[in-house]
Each structure stands twice: as C-alpha cells, then as structure tokens.
Length: 245
Length: 245
Image (cartoon, rainbow over all chains, first blue to last red; front, side, top):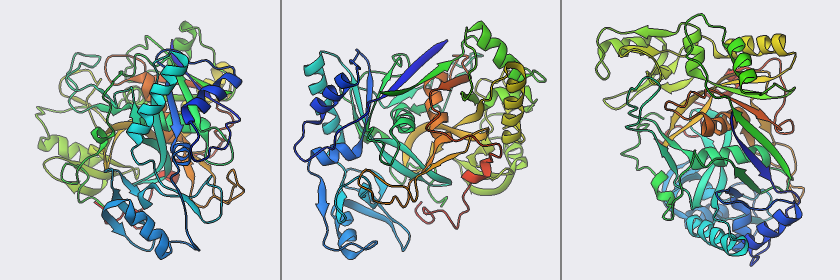
C-alpha cells in the first residue's frame, strides 16, 4: 500500500492585517503537536492570506451586487467575461478567470467588509514557504486555495490560486501506460487536486481550519523553486472549450 | 488536529471482462494488509469498472479521430456540444458533459481497443458497495472517478462519474460562518474533491493503483442510500457560465 495523510490544524486564531501568517502557522502547528517535515505540502485558504495582507475593504452599504461592489470587482479586473444579473465573471488582473474577481465576504468580520484576493498569491506563498523554512528548517511547499464554481457541473470545489516550492503539474505526456502505450494528453494539475483534497478538512463555515498539511506525497509532486500560477492560465484561444457555453 | 488518510492498494491485477471487481478489491486489500472500516470511502478508477463490465470495444483501424471512433462516441451521446478538429465535447447518454463521451484507450490492452464508460456508473458503484458490505460486513461508500479537462484552466483533474453510499454535496447554504453570517452560495461537491484527491495516489500511467481508500472523513461526508450522479448535472440554462466561452 501507498498512502498519504492530510492534517488540518485546529483552533486557528482569527487573522488580522499585519499578522505574520507563516509564524502563526508554525505556532499553531506546535500547539496541535504537529511538526513540519521535509517535503510537506501545506495548503492554506486564501482568506487568511487576504486578511494578513490587509486586503479587506469596507463598502458603504452593500445589498447584493451594488454598484460599489461591482466597482470593487472591476478594480481587480483585466477583462469582463460575462456580466449579467446572475454572474460577474472576469479575468482578474492576475489572469485568473473567476467570479467577482474572487472577492467575497464569507468568514470576513463586519457586515460590509469584503476580502480581495492577495495582490500576488505566488509571492505570498513563496514568502510563507521561506519563513516556514527559516523557522523550522524544513523545505515545504505552500499552496493557496480558493473555492471555484465550475462550468457544466453543479456545486463548487477548491482549486489553487497560487503556490510555491511545487510544480503545478504531473505530466504524463510521452510516458507509458500499463501496456507500454504512450500517453498523449494526460497532464494533471496536482496543485488543484491538493487544494480540492484540503477542502475536505477545511470546510467553508466556522471550522477555523484554514491550514491543511499533506504528508507522504513525495512521489506525486515535483519540487520547484520557480513555480508560477500563470502555468495554469489558458487563453480563450487555446481553451478547448471555446464556444461550448 | 483533524486528519484523514488515503491508502492506495498496490499491485492491483489486470481486470478482465466478467471479473468480480468488488471481490478483487477486497482480495487485494487483504494482500495489502488493509482491512475495510465502517465509513471508509473507496474511490475506484472508471477504467477498471469498464473492463470488468466488458465495456471495451475494438475498432478496425483507428488513427486519430477516425470516423469509426466518432461513431463510437456518438453511440454514447445524447447531444453534441462542440465538434471541431480539436475536441468532440458531448452530453453523453447519462447526462455527463465530457470529451469523447469519456471514451479513451489509456491502460486498455490492444492497440485498437477503447474503453467506454460503465453503462450506469451509479449502479456499478452501488453493486460494488453491496458486495463489499457482503464480504466484509462494513458499510463503505464507493465513488467512480475519471479524468476531466476543465474550461478556463490548463491540465486535468479527476472528478466523480458515479457513486453510492455517499451524498455528493456538503451544503453550507443557510449555515453560519465564523462571525455568524449566513452562507448563501457555498455548496461543495465532496465526491469530486474525493476523486481529485484519490488521483494523487492513483496516477495515470503504469502505477496499477486504481483503488484508493479514504479513512477519517466521517465529518466531511454524509451517508446516503439514494445517491445519484444526476444531482451534479446542470442544464445549459441553469449554468452560470452560459455564454462565457
């Protein structure tokens, strides 16, 4: 048998603007009797990064998609993909295609406060990775996750919005299957699978478990010092699903 | 801390038409020194179900998307979503939106052989669940997974195509967040997250690890005797992403 373990830190404190998130993660891990190991992958919910980086904005009076909220979204937007009564889908300034530019208010304190995505999630992840390395001596990977709606399928799953210390893909193209046949298409977004997997423990409500540590996945992932979320972006022209919706 | 473990069975034998897959899973688990526990979630790769159910078809001479291959796909299709040089995206006869109706040849023996999806993945999963219950006395959930390309995002992840003994969603709508605010949108497709998570151990090549057992997720999932993949389908009109691609 081959296995991995996913460990969610519990009783994570509320994070405020200016908090050192990496240090908090290390402290809370200690209190949870969890010590980091070389090669661990740490998935962290976007919301705590946004809070630590002061990316929370207070709107005047927000009821539904008020003009002020739309303005906030557009301020984070490179291109509007669809604007309707039901959905404001944009390519955000980073290149991520996401609803409302990833802005939402769940688990953000204050009735009129909304959290924006971190300015540069890859940089946030890298800073976190380096601080954890400094504090613990261990080389880990860090993935920042957020919740995504998906075309063609009901309900949401978590995917990655930034990462550090890990290659985003496990690429099988050119490799062989069980019968020696060359695989032509399979290229797996392991950072998305890790984000999705972490959500099973994180939850979305009042669990206070924004950090999940994966152990035992050395074979499944590749380390990378030059990880880049842009590798997951796809232009409209490259997108196989162009003209399908 | 709160944790779960994912265990991949190793040295899984090649599956042939007529094999009792559930019995094979129980036998291989024994050889792996893994015994099933109440509440385990077992994710199984679609390909082994297809093989066990004789859903492998031999085409005459297939080079690329020959007319014979297209015919095979259309035989499984309710509605063509897009047909171009690059992609044949369909709503299959089950209601799943998938490329080539889920037909492919990776890990299928024989140069001209292709595997079709199980006729009714929910039924296949339920049969497997009942047999495991019979053989081990344990109530488990079974999810059948397949690999999906995704609009707006490069590379693939595994999602569910059928399941039994587990509710597909963890629905937070109407529940409260950390600050007592009511969540309005979050409804998580846990069966997809489990499928994605399992892929990290299964792989796509010659790993011979089509079965992954999850343990420790009782809080994250709900048991259900009436699970139905249709709950994950979404009609074009309901799809928030309509007119975005």
